[in-house]
Image 1 (cartoon, rainbow, N blue to C red):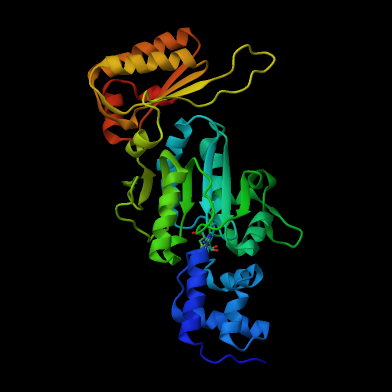
Image 2 (image 1 turned 90 degrees about the vertical axis):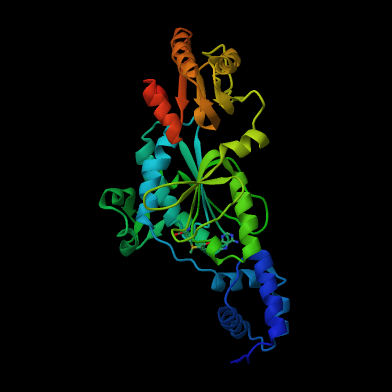
Length: 380
Ligand SMILES: C[S@@+](CC[C@H](N)C(=O)[O-])C[C@H]1O[C@@H](n2cnc3c(N)ncnc32)[C@H](O)[C@@H]1O
C-alpha cells in the first residue's frame, strides 16, 4: 500500500488553487491534505505532483470534491426558516401571477427541495402552480436526491402532518411520493462556474456559501441576486449573515433573517420606464378569440396624486384581457388619491371582465391599504 508522506506545501497550494477555482470551496489545510492523501492511496500514487496532474481530468476532480464537500442536510432543517417560508413568503407567492419558480441551490441529497415541495403544495393550495429546480455539484448526491428514498430516521425531522408525503419503498425505506417528486427537477450544477438560471420567486442557498472562499462567495451572491425576480426571497443558512450586498435588503422576521431582492434596483435595471409589463400572453385556443393576457403594473417612485397611477392603469387595461396586477412595493409615496383610483378602476375593470388586483409587502403600504379599506386587493 502506498503511504504518502506529508505533502510539499507548493503542491498542496496548487491543488488548493485548482479546487477553489473550480468549486469555490476553501477547505482547511489539514482537511485538504488528509483528503488528497486518501485519494493518492486510492489511486496508488505516491508523488504529490503526479496526483496534482490527475486533477486536470474530471473523474479525479469529482472524486476529490466528493471528499471535500460537506453534504450534511435534513428535512425541515432550521424550523424558524420553515415558519418564515409559510408566514412571510407564502402570502407573497399566493399574490403572484403565473407558475412560481423556486431554486434549492446546493441541495445535497434533496431533503431541502422536497421540504419546499411539501410546504408549497399545502401553502399554495392550488392558488398557483410551482416548480422547483434543485441543483448540486455532486453527481452522487443528485442521483440519490432524484430517487427520493430515505431512511425512517431521516423523515423523523418532519412534523407529523408532512410525513404523509412518502410511500414505503421496496427495501423498507420511505420514498417521496410521485406527486411531490414531479414538482422537483434535479440537476448537476456548479455555483462557482457556468451560468445561473434566472427569474426565481424564492432561492434557498443554505449552508453552501459558508464553505466558499470570500471572492467566490461574493461572485456567487451577485449571481444569486440577479437570478431573483424583483421582490423575490433569498434564504441563506441560519447562521450565515450578509452585509451590504448590492440589490438585497433584509426582510425582518422574528426568528431568522430573510433577504429579498430590492425593487429599486430593478426599476433601474429591468423594468420598462412606464412600469407596465405584460406577464402572461398565452396562445389562442380554439374557444377563445383573444389571448389571455395578464399585465403587471410595477409602481416606482412618487404617486402623490392619482394622475400618474391612472395613466399607467389605462395603458395596462389596453393590453390586458384577464388580469391587471399592481405591485405597490416600488412606490416611495402613495397619496390619498391613488386609493380612489384603485377603487374606481376595480369597479370599471369588473364591468370589462378583468380582475384588478394589487399587492404589497412593505409595512407602510399595507397600512395605506388598511386605512383605505383596500386590503382585500390581493384576493381573487
Ligand atoms: C451542507 S450542504 C447543504 C444542503 C442544504 N442546502 C441544506 O442546507 O440542508 C452543502 C451542499 O453544497 C454543495 N456544494 C458545494 N459547493 C458547491 C458548488 N460549487 N456548486 C454547487 N453545489 C455546491 C455540496 O455538494 C453540498 O451538497
